[in-house]
Length: 55
Image (cartoon, rainbow, N blue to C red):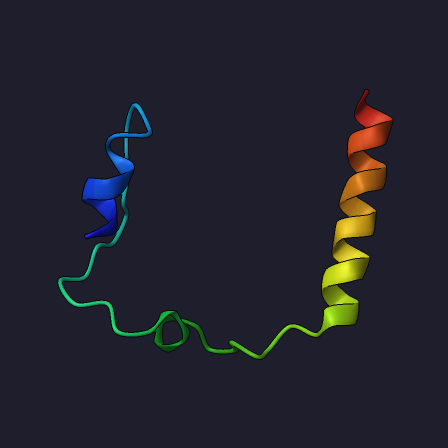
């Protein structure tokens, strides 16, 4: 179980919902479309700018 693995790396784990059997993340979302490479690159570039501005 992922929770057991994380416990050695963090101080506390908070789970709002923890189903007994989690088969696929996508079943929990109304829209779980694939993210394109271009979208990922744009988001990373935006975050890089925000992080740089915070320094």
